[in-house]
Image 1 (cartoon, rainbow, N blue to C red):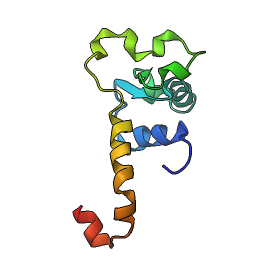
Image 2 (cartoon, rainbow, N blue to C red; image 1 turned 30 degrees about the horizontal axis):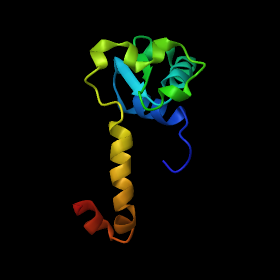
Image 3 (cartoon, rainbow, N blue to C red; image 1 turned 90 degrees about the horizontal axis):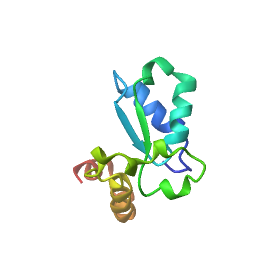
Length: 108
């Protein structure tokens, strides 16, 4: 994603690529995503639990603590920052990959 993340992006991925909504979604803007999906496809997402990841929770001062991942001990072992970590690694490869032809790119 090149621009600031919108709830539309994860909504579209979840709704168009999954035959059934996931049980739990952990997302940096989970509170707003929850509202967004329920306004568009409430039946599809009616049993999905939306949470805000640990890294971004400190920015959610007006949100219910019900969205705070750390409130639920069953998620203590989950690395909620894995996407941020993967993006960091991909940024290191960005300049090299941008100069490759398609065939070479796909082999990396």
